[in-house]
Length: 205
Image (cartoon, rainbow, N blue to C red; front, side, top):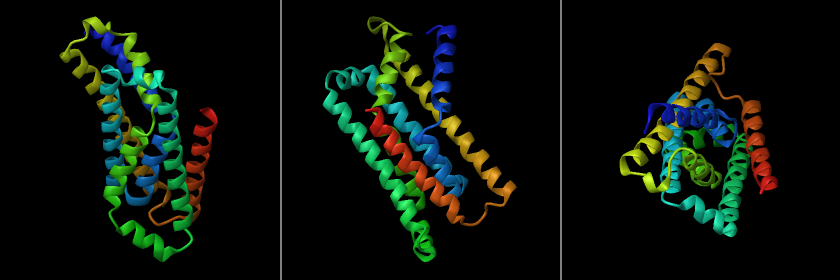
């Protein structure tokens, strides 16, 4: 793959990663709730999920979803349901400080990994995005294993790096503005954001 082609691909992937949405909300939530390590775990698992979708698009998943709209809608509804679940869980947890403390102390890192991956995996728009994107840079007949690996690895590195940066900057902001303890109003805002994102996904179907 020519350097100029790779740079164009990387630039578009960077713009895609930086666009605000459910993924950003998940990384912010886990960083604010559990610290920078949890935010970074969510960023890493999200990058893995996005990288897998990039690879799946190269082998035809994007085309499959396009041909079977019910499959696409099913995944979209699952994604919206998961966002709503996260939002409601946050809102319910804030009702009791003791309950919130127990929730946080129980497998927080595993939850960060789960949420980061699920937000990517339950977003079939990624498959269609990568199908459209990759088709602009490579002819399927000229696709080789090396080129496919480079493309998927580029997607993974850019997405993971961006959200790792988000986690680090969020942690720095927490310390700068004194958000070192639980802030129930902030939690409620995050919960409302997740529910709003779920509704936005449903409306866009």
